[in-house]
View 1 (cartoon, rainbow, N blue to C red):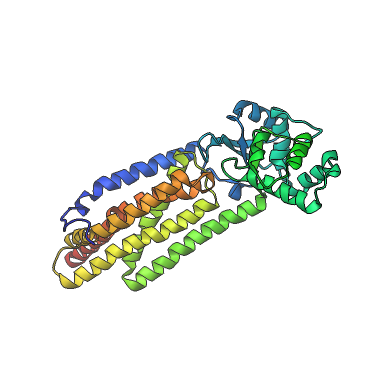
View 2 (view 1 turned 90 degrees about the horizontal axis):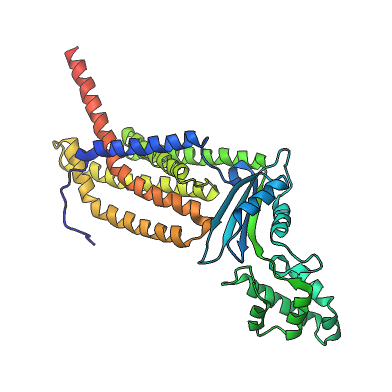
Amino acid sequence: MKLFKETNIDFIGKRNYFFLLSLALFLAGAASLVLKGGPKFGIDFKGGTLVYAKFAEAPRLDDIRKALTGVGLDVATLQPFEEAAGSHELKIDLNLAEGEETTSGQDKIVETLRGVYGGDESKIDFNNVGLETLADRVVSNQKIAESALTTEQINQGVEALLAFRDEAPQSGLVTDFSQLTSVSEVNPDIISALQEEAYLGAFAIKGGGYVGPKIGKELQWQAAQATLFALGGMLVYIAFRFEWIYGVAAVVAVFHDVLITIGFFSIFDREIELTAIAAFLTLVGYSMNDTIVIFDRVRENRKLTRRQPLISLLNLSVNQTLARTVLTSGLTLLAVACLLIFGGEVLRSFSFALFVGVIVGTYSSVFIASPILLWWQDLAAARAGRGRRA
């Protein structure tokens, strides 16, 4: 399939403009990193506690931050987001407390939020309770004890109620007991007992995690190793498959892509998490593949037109692969954009890295990797000329 007819665009002639663009992006990213004290790592790398909470109404950020710091918690991030319209969700990221190695701050976060939003100490919070605790509380209710319901029926009813609570659109947060009446397989006596034994909290903890400082440092080193090993392996492959300068050009282009993408993370105040490292490795492979396609066409054209200048060969090769590049990169970018918009907060770092990386990686294959070959040829010709004069 041909997207458009043969083109004859002077891509390599415009390389200086893109060098300046890359330099501007690099300097902007570097300045942002310096001003912010380096990359913003997620708890995967720095250690700490992460909690995702959903609220019945828009979370009161100032009250929550004040309450968390008031109990001695080091709040790194309070970031509101919405998985769906009106979901009122909040990402709470705590830095690791001094001397803290194995304990998690999640329980403290829940206690603090209850202090902010209130609760009934004589009852359990239906929005933040597990199956076993809820079943035990319902069984202990006098109405249930006097009913003819079996233990199996009670457990099945409780399971159905929790499943209803956790499915969309509730997604962990029930705001009115009347909503539970729509669960047809649950005996009304169980719902009645639930109203006596539980209350509906104004928030629900949807998930979270904890990472110790030692694990965080190990993950940083392993992430760096994985990226460097991937680049080294590709350099060896391309040097064997083509020439060593082709490998150097491809690796420089990939370094360019990763560094600019990290700069964008800093500029847009995004955290670098494990999913972002997965995206960086994906980007390395994607950008390298795009570059190899162009280099392979350069090698083929060199055999067919040995006397043609390299700059003409590079332009010819880029134009010949342009339709493929536009189709591949365009469709990839469309898929990544959908993931960025609809994929949710958990995948935000991954999709953001790929979105930026696909754009930067596509133009670097043309305007960074290819001109390096031209620069090397000019340098070699200059050296040869000096050698003859000597």
